[in-house]
Image 1 (cartoon, rainbow, N blue to C red):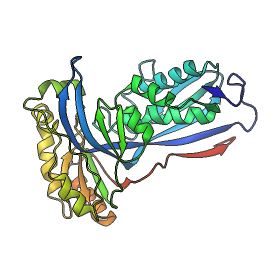
Image 2 (image 1 turned 60 degrees about the vertical axis):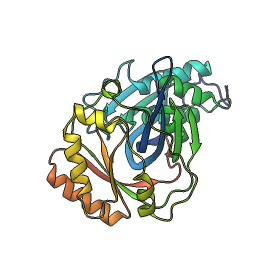
Image 3 (image 1 turned 135 degrees about the horizontal axis):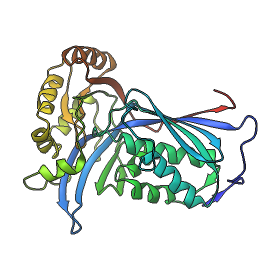
Amino acid sequence: MTSSADPGASPGPGARGCVLAAWAKVNLYLHVVGRRADGYHELDSLIVFAGIGDRIALRPNDALSLTIDGPFGASLPADGDNLVLRAAKALQAQSGGAAGADIRLTKNLPLAAGIGGGSADAAAVLRGLVELWRLEPDPGTLETLGAELGADVPVCLFGRPAFVAGIGERIERAPPLPPAWLVLANPGIALATPAVFKARQGNFSAPAAWQQVDRDAAALAARLADTTNDLEAPARSLVPDIGALLDDLAGQPGCLLARMSGSGATCFGLFGGRNEAEQAARLLAKQRPGQWVAAAPLLHGRIERAWWDGGD
């Protein structure tokens, strides 16, 4: 990894900062296809990103620091175990530089929710610090760092709809997906991934990746109906309200498919357009007061950062 500037240099007046979006990751399907000798499960999944997420703001500084705010920030520690800080320290060590950064994480997504919030935050920090520190990483460097941080970090670095296999290391760009909207909802109960895998029973599933292009959201939903989320049943056994939430989502006018994302407990409804999705989100929020509900577009490409110079 090389740098086009002295990574240890102090930022001068007007030094640049950046803001990045860390979009919510959604598993449109998730099949558990096997288990390796080391105990890790092998997966097959179609992962997309929704246009709602956390916010990462970076400013140059001599040392690394992390501040957390936002509606879900209070319960997230800003210490050395935080994935964002671990990602920054890993890149700092890899680059061999003494540069630092002030990192502000605005946590808009619920924690331990099956939508990759921490992984998306780590990926955004890695991408942002490469720009902020003017690094020129060798091909594959960020992906290797990401895989060491967590299984979902590499696909969050990829940042586009993708079929993901293995334990997250095999990523293949998905065929173009039709315009669609998602309604995301979380019952307010954190669900640890290891507990869900431990509760899983039954046979393994077959991979389901495809290369055909679906003409619209309804055709995509019909194709997804032949797939599952294999972690949904064990998650429901641990958090029964997931089943009720899925029923509430499926009952919204215009919902083409209701499913859990990742290891839960966030669930999503697939919709053909913005108006239907936003109306469904309003109705669901009334049905489930106090729970997190959001409508967002399915993103088709990477939209991640805005730069500013000097002040806010």
